[in-house]
Image (cartoon, rainbow, N blue to C red; front, side, top):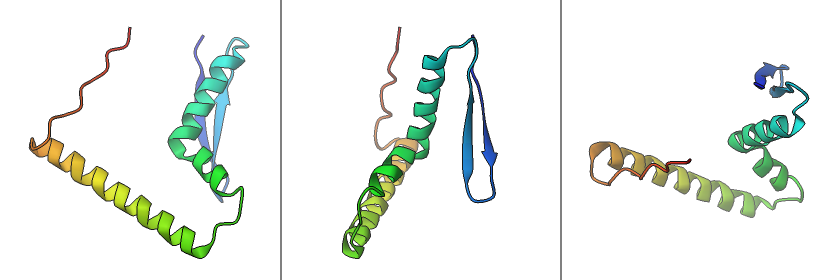
Length: 92
């Protein structure tokens, strides 16, 4: 009961392809949602629902840049041992 997937290029962007195995559509949908979440497709679709003013766009891009910089600094500090590593969640 394995699922397969691959990413295809159509020239403009990337297409995600999920294979359904053993007629298990629920598992295929779960895999598709996970890939789309990882790629940021849901965030992108939500952003294109309504017009975004240029000032709002600049503010959003600035906030994203700050978020990326903080994440990078946090990862660097963890590697250097200045900040403890996050605890790993053990799932049953």
